Length: 158
Image (cartoon, rainbow, N blue to C red; front, top):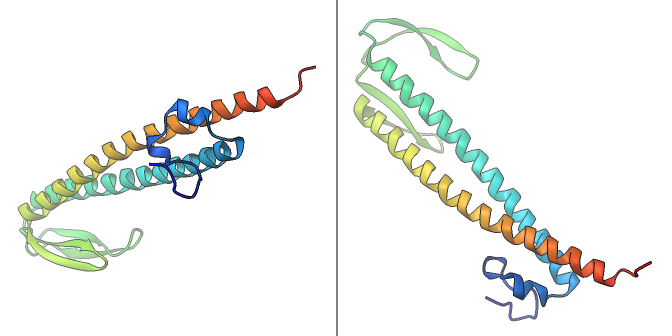
C-alpha cells in the first residue's frame, strides 16, 4: 500500500523493482524503519523465549509437586532468592498467576493444562514472529543493497 502523502510505500509489500524507483532519502528511511522493526521483533522473540522457558519450568514443577505426599516438608519460594520452610497441605490445589497480580485456584490437572495451553500459544506466536522478522530482514537487506548501488552510481569515478 502506497502512502497518500508521497512518502515511501509500506515496507510489507515492497518489491525490489519498487525500491529501485525510490529516491536515496526514501531508501534510507525505509532501511532505518525496517531495521527498527526487525530489532523490535527480535526483542519480542526474546521475551517469548523467556516466557516459554518459565512456563516449561512451572509445568515441570507442578508435575514434581503432584508426586510429593501430603505433609511433606519443603522450601516455599517467596521471591527468586527468598525461600521459607513449609509443609505441603494439599497437592491437588494450586494457585495460578493469570497476570497483573491475579491468581486463580485450580486443580493440579487444570494448572498443568493451563501451562500447556500457554506454552502452545507462545510457540505459535513465536513461529509467526519468526516468519515476519525474516520478511522484514529481507526487505531491509534489499533496501540496503539498492541504496549502496545508487550511492556508487552517484560517486565520481577516479
